[in-house]
Amino acid sequence: MNRNILFTLTTLAALAYAPAALAQGQATPDYPQAQTSQLSRASVVDALHDARMAGLVVHGEIYPAADASEADGPTRAQVMAELRAARELGLIAQGERNPLPTAAQRERIRQAGLMALDGRLARRVN
Image (cartoon, rainbow, N blue to C red; front, top):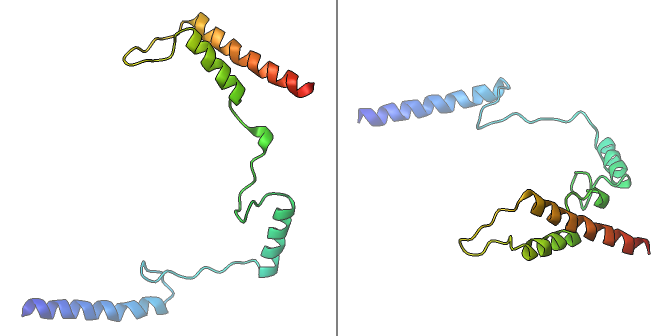
């Protein structure tokens, strides 16, 4: 019975404190304070319109659109050419066999990729 009385008194004390904390404007985990913006709705709409016109908003998401010319990494043609060169040199892992390329073999594979890139650029020019 003492346990029930203690629990009841503790609950009543907590409930009595909660409105006082809210009245003082203090934030609690259960009652966070509302944040207000210093910008008007019209200024936010104008900023959004300017961002859309500049191409900075893509399908409603607010992050800059990736430029296709900024693509990093090798092209598909380079990867395929390097794969063919590695297969010809017998450097593709099979089962437990995992051969390590020598410096000369790595250079040959790299050159195959560069030749594929040069061929692709030459076809684009013609």
